[in-house]
Length: 335
Image (tube, rainbow, N blue to C red; front, side, top):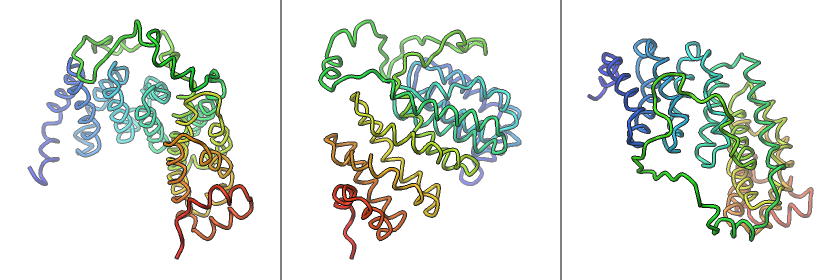
């Protein structure tokens, strides 16, 4: 349809919405996932006047998909529901407490955790003057960042043995990405949403912290929340120096991948005031043996150097012999 495509969709918005809502209840998980993606695109690309009468129907469908048994569907629903809120903040304000993004922030799948953080960041952008809402998100980030400290201690050998044991994989419900099995939840009404238990109760404590790292990144991208995010930097450092369970390497990898993004969001002048706070844990990761975490730390070192300037970065390393010995060798050579 070329340039007229959006206009044509706007003319038939009611029919498109009904199609998408029906598709979110399909047995095929790929159809449910596609429906959520289409909902997000509809609210982001089509004339708001045409979509506005259908906002609550779209949000309700996405909300129920947040509880889907297939993570790709719940992940797409997370993105779709946040796009609806961002496009129509006034219409969606009353529905925010019912959205399950905080549960997905500690999901077993890293991409779901990241998209949940993006969704919460969308809330900050949609309601920039809502101080109470901002404080709730800040408190959530602070609480989640500290949870990894309470993760039960476990050696790598014990973890490997657990993964290989039959007990770890017995009596568990299995879902293939192509599964057509009946779902635990079928859409009927708003009352289908589960309110009588904590859906995050089975999530690992370290996963809460990993999700919170992404959330701090999103807070840094929102001007109104930047000061709150900076106040959480010590908690980021505390999480990155933990070593008492195998998944600490995941926390390190996540932080070193997100820190350059955090720095870019804050800007050179602001971020360089705090960069030295991360040098000790960065050096510890570079001295470690986990390859993915170490690779992320090396790339982080190079990107931070380019962000604040190679000469300034090298000058900061000169203040500590350990920083100079461990971090400096990974910098790109200067002409």
